[in-house]
Amino acid sequence: MPTPLGLVRGLGSGKTGTDVFIRERISGLLLFFLVPYLMIALIPVFGEPYPVVLERIGSLWVGPPLIAFLLINATHMAMGMRVIIEDYVHARMLKYALLILNWAFSWGCALIAALAVIRIMFLVVRI
Image (cartoon, rainbow, N blue to C red; front, side, top):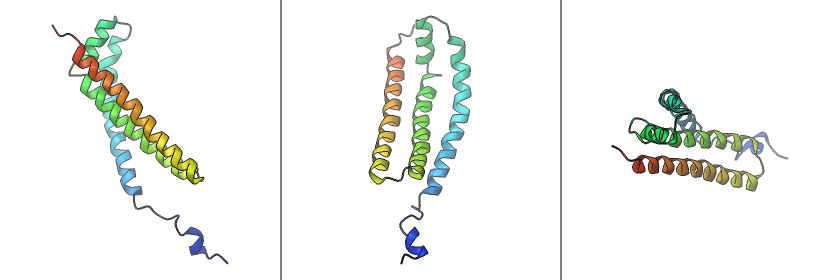
């Protein structure tokens, strides 16, 4: 006969909830400041010729904040999806597969985009 303690044993705190909560809030706060800055910096180049856009993205005022945005956003997205997967997917193997795919997708997209921005920053010819 299962006892109430036996039913919940193994389902308790992983001792990481507070850490994830704080990291999500810090990344959200950083994004709160980066998004408006990048919008102000990049909206004026919509519709401009390709070299003008490359010059703006390659500048030191836009390139590094854009890379920071991409990496922080990937971290924020991965943490949020991890919490959703852990809370709502109960099949053990499916949960592990989704967690691996979440990590790979988040960091894969962020690294490809960051490498593209770095390439733009180093290949744009400065006069």
